[in-house]
Length: 415
Image (cartoon, rainbow, N blue to C red; front, top):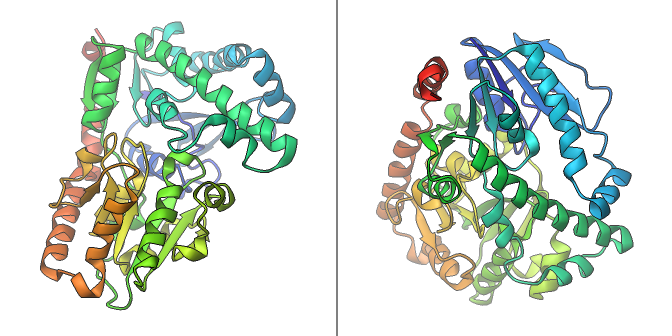
């Protein structure tokens, strides 16, 4: 059986089929390593480099699609003239690959990009594996300030202003394009109750099945969590968009510091703190925050194994990999009760939830991990329950079996 994936990451194209992937796309590369011996697999991804050519690695055929508009001039043009022409060009390239590869099934990862537009141009069954959903993400992209303040107060001069205006324009176009895709595609793989409900809002007749998520290999292999016993250390992985909650980190950390508590908050990811420090009036140094930059899976696993808890402050998320990876190690997770997160965390049983943006509530929960109030029996119970649930949820053999069943029954599934 031939299966063609459309992925917003290059999976293992650059890693030579290692299965390790990279930050932000590791779960797709892990799924590829699981499936490549079971089906004849092709993977389409976008690239800004003309040098990337189709090639076969470990039996997988990769199809890089060069996006000629993914450069400074192209982004400025799209900002002022729209994105539709660029989408139309990319779809024509996608269809050339479909005609060349002749798949039995097409699996599109995410509704955020133009990939799902192929569904209206082909008779090949299309499955959309939901990742995030653009519309609700865009609605809380700036949970604590206006777009104009974000555009004009984030630095970078005129180029920075244009870049942020482009981001806003791209997201607004993404909302419109996604609505069209969701009405066109009939079959979905969902991860949480939230993404299922969001799909059904747009497409009440959608056929929905649960789609499992394969984590990066190190999180299956690493030893389970055990706290270090030294001063509390909290870990967060985060990225640049404001909805990821860097402001909550600064506000909660400042409250803990003002209480005279000794702790460290290690923040990983590609966040630029200057804007968030300006908006909140709080510096990282005032919040116990240590910015650690982007880390690979092995480094993150080591950091998580002996931290006190993992904190996920995002204002919106569907099925965040970082939460799932922490749970896989048995790390106690403190997370905002948003989007699909309550499908991953049963409050006070497999993790601890707090209201989105409520730094005081987060501070109260984090205080439970300080030596003076640490309840070892309760925390170890949460750890064990979270790990047990994560092992079940991310079982690689079960996910492979379910996906193969979906592929093999495509004739009746999409009738």
